[in-house]
Image 1 (cartoon, rainbow, N blue to C red):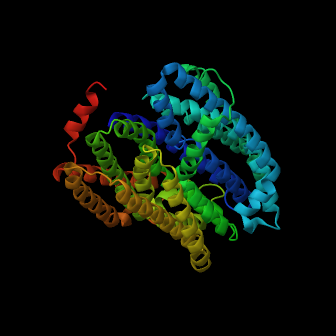
Image 2 (cartoon, rainbow, N blue to C red):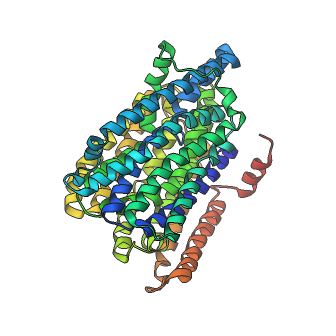
Image 3 (cartoon, rainbow, N blue to C red):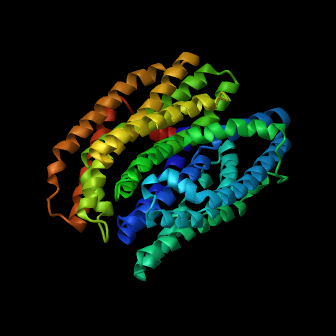
Length: 510
C-alpha cells in the first residue's frame, strides 16, 4: 500500500510543483486586480468541477462498483459496465457543459456576487466559457484513470495530470515573451485549459486503458442510475477543500484583490494536501474495499492505521512549516512582475490561517474511504455540506472584520467542522480501527513535528529583510532542509519510524 502511495504522491508532487511554476507565472503575467480576479474566479469554478471528477473523487464510487461486478460476473461484464459508465459520463458532461455555458452569467453572479455591476463579471463569464471544453474531456479521462487504479496500476494515472500544467506553462511563457496585454493573455490562458484536457485524453487513449471499457455506449438503465446515485454524492464530498474555497470566494469577491490573495495562498495548501490527500483517496479506497468485502478486520485496521500515521506524519509538519515560513515562501514564489510586496503580505496572512485547516483536510481524506468502501457516500456529502455552511456563515462575519485573513480562518473552521463530523459518525457507526503500533507512534510523530516547528520558528529571523532572488532561495532552502532533516532524525530516535525497515519493505516484490 505504501509503495502505491509513494507512486501516486510522487506524481502529485511533480504536478503540484509544476502548478507552483504555473501560478508564479500567472502572478507575474496578471498580477492582482480586475483581470486577475476574473480569470482566477473562472479558473476556480473549473477547478472545482475538475476535482469533482479527478484526483480520487470518482474512485470513491467507480472502484467499489467495478470490483463488485468483476468479482461477481467476470472481466467481460466488468468491461461492459465500465463502457456504459464511460459513455454515460461523456454524454452527460457534454450536455452539462452546454447548459453551464448558457447559464454562466447567473452562475458567476452566484459564485462572485461582488463582481455584479462591474466589467469584472463580464470578463469572468468570458474566461469561464472558454475553459468549459475541459469538462467534456475530464469525464472520460477520470473514468479511464479510475479503471487503472482499480487494477492497482497507479503510475500512469499519477503522472497524467502533468500535461495540464505543462500546456498552461507553455502558453504563459509565450505570452510573457510576447509582452501580451493582461486581458488578451487571460483569454488565451482560458482557451488553453480546454486544450490541456484534450491532451490528457489522447494520452490515455493511446494506452491499453481504453480496452478496460468496451463496448462504449451511453445508458441510463437501472444499474447506471444506481451507480450515479452513489457516485454524485461521493464526487461532491471528495471535493470538500474546493467547495470551501468557493465559499470563501463568494464573500471575498466584494473586496478588491481578495480572490487573488486567497487563490495564491490556497495553492500552497494544495501541495501537501495533494501529496497526502490525493494519494490517500486513490490508494485507500481499493485497499479498504477489498478488506471490507472479505470481512478481514485485521486488514481494515492495518489500512486505517497506516493511513492515519501517514496523514499525521506528513500534514502536521507541513502545517507548522507553512505557518512559520508563510511570508518568505510567498515572496519567493509569487513576488514578481505585477505581484507586489503588499500582495505578498496579504497572501501570507491568508496562508497562515488556511494552514490551520490543513490537518482537517487530510483527516477527511483519511476518514472518507472507510465510508466509500462500505458504499456510503451520503455521510461524507453531509459532512462537506456542514463545513460549507459553517465556512460561509463565519466568512460573512470575519471577512467584514478582518478581510481576506478572516475569510481564510473561516475556511479552516469549515474544514474542521467536516472532519469532526466524519469522525463522530464513523466512530458511532462502525468504529475506526487503530492498531497498537499506531497508538504508539502517533504521539511521537506529534512530538517530532512540534520540535521541527520550534526549530523553524527560531530560525525565522535568518532571512535578511532586503534579501532578493538567489539569497532568499538559498536561505529558505536551508531552513526547509534543516527542518526536514531534524524531523526525520527525531522520528527515528523516538521510534516513530525506522527508515531502514521502510526502505527494505519498498524493495520487496509487490
